[in-house]
Length: 287
Image 1 (spheres, rainbow, N blue to C red):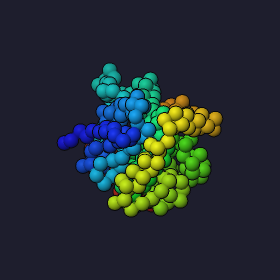
Image 2 (image 1 turned 90 degrees about the vertical axis):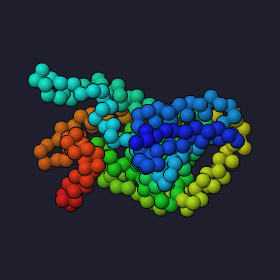
Image 3 (image 1 turned 120 degrees about the vertical axis):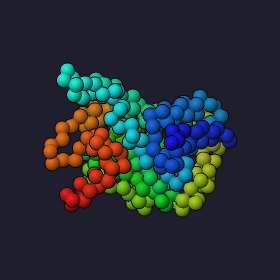
Image 4 (image 1 turned 90 degrees about the horizontal axis):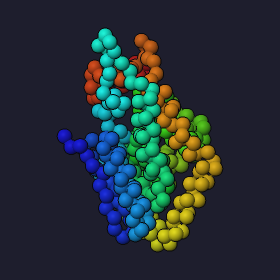
């Protein structure tokens, strides 16, 4: 099975960063997320790059983090004196979650303007990348959301502050608590994307906006982005990078009561595919 990659190409004032694992709907492993951060660092260091264009190979932007890695991110399971698995420590959780959120912070704080071209599935970690970008053009096939909130997080999202600023508190809570996926028209209405085009025209629309950006002076581009980040900080948005990992650590250590769907136990016992089916059946029965 392909492990996927995040590909980098710089030309004509643009840095193209492509999430390349289409057979898995561009689900990203930790290794791929590290490659993505390296791509943004390369773009920042290249004076000829004036805009970063983030896109997904195939029909989707990204279905989020590769769920096959869930349960392993906090290190190898430890056993107690009776040989039973122990929960990872809070310190191990905090260390990993801080590293994880800093990847998205790097995208958010890129010195160069960032343009995301989204289509198909844009979920979970994929949505964080969309939210971290300056401007977003969507294809009309877009399916955007945080369905992973059904796994027990119920609102502990890394970009919750940004979502509340952008959507307003009520719609942000709806996005996280209901964990539905929104289509392109709804995303445009709610301000999650700047523009919607037929998916076959997505690359051309991206090139049009990228060309308009690369015509701007280098210093103006960088100073404009710096001013934007200062404004976001004055609004308190960047605080999400200080507390986001703490809330995520707490949320991934919740207690499940007997009548609640425990996704980590289901994944351990049944695997990712069966877990998703079991979870769907559980919520449909509840409804």
